[in-house]
Image 1: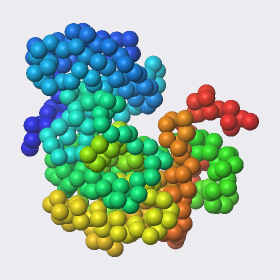
Image 2 (image 1 turned 90 degrees about the vertical axis):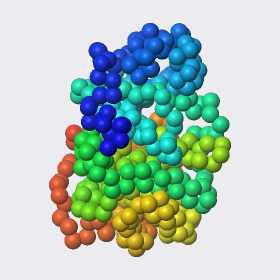
Image 3 (image 1 turned 60 degrees about the vertical axis):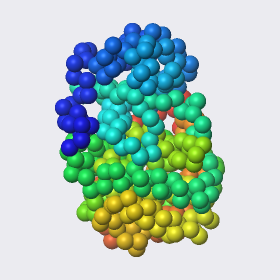
Image 4 (image 1 turned 45 degrees about the horizontal axis):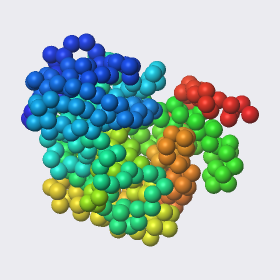
Length: 399
């Protein structure tokens, strides 16, 4: 077992730290960061911390300039870093900050993994979900952040799939991965399995927009319960699989990536990291990144590119091409629910992605494939018990 995995088993990477990680941005200071870093870097001092940019959402990204003493400089910590946690003044993000911190800590020994460089991770492990990551400031790095509207082209999608294969190969069929009890199982936790029901109020906002009404199939309005049925069957299908597991990103659209100037695509925002099968990541990235025409012409070839890369990295027991394609045919439903519940002012444009996933589901006969001959596993009232709309969107359903 690696040192990283032994640390994970201990519960916290720095058990000598006292108190809890801060919840308010006002608590972030040079003195606090010094105290946080000293168990990992004895003698380090942060002489000054200057906030350059704060971006709040489900998490907080604080871009900062640091003045470090000689110990910090020798440790290789740069003057510009990004601190990521939840300091968003009251927005409850559940456990995603702790999960992401644990993930980056787990991955610190994966020298070839396409991930941002991290310098420190910590979490409370007390049920509060607090975690913090100090990573490179990609805002100053050579390259560009991905976006849902990027046109990657066939070569760009192929390179992205090979990057995902590198991530998946790092923990392919790993017994140690099975021991990480903090890591949710794909489609076996409420964030996944109840995702459609939890976010249905946001889906209803998009259902009322004329541009969505022109695009979506009639059954989304006439028989929306079919969406819930298909989503439940996707979850059940995933949990029935017995092929090898690995670490998956869980939210692998191009907007959660950064393309370095040397052509390497690295993966960010590991808040939905899971233990599961790779086809969720593969389908979500590939179907969202390809135009409908590109996907119809080249998806099978690109799936082969992914499989060959994964096998070349030593993965054994990888599904054959036909069996892998049968997996991909079912996963459009995940993208359908994710992008139907997206609000564009969260930073990504949803309509092009909705078009691509619904078109894939139509071409793959996905909904019938999942639901034909099966009784619904439950009969929820769509919207009942869903996450309430924030005030910014409530008027869109009331008008």
